[in-house]
Image: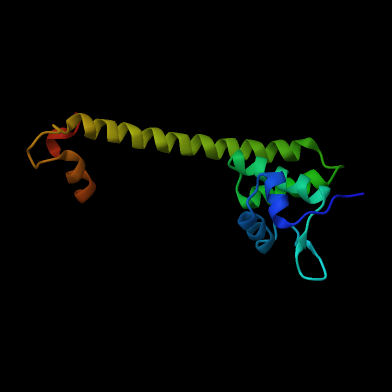
Length: 142
């Protein structure tokens, strides 16, 4: 017999906030909950498993659409694992691209911070770069 719980209890048990549970329902990622006669949402063991799956997927940075795909694969016990691996590999590729972007941003900021005197003078290569979109000529590396 499945334990029935309200949205607050389900949120606590799954680690997904009540607000996010309602959001996942509204975007069709999570099925709308059964309701009591008075209209309160009721969740069972299967719902909690699904919410935990979604939470772990979000913790790994998967998008809503990727989670939708992973949920479908999870529920299809006859699916080949290569499909799951392909989704995960595509996500790794996206993370690698984001990591390269973050490293480039960090390198640019480190260069600008290095070039800024950080003293009482008003001239600042950080502000100048933000204003113009280009580093000062004297700050460019040859």
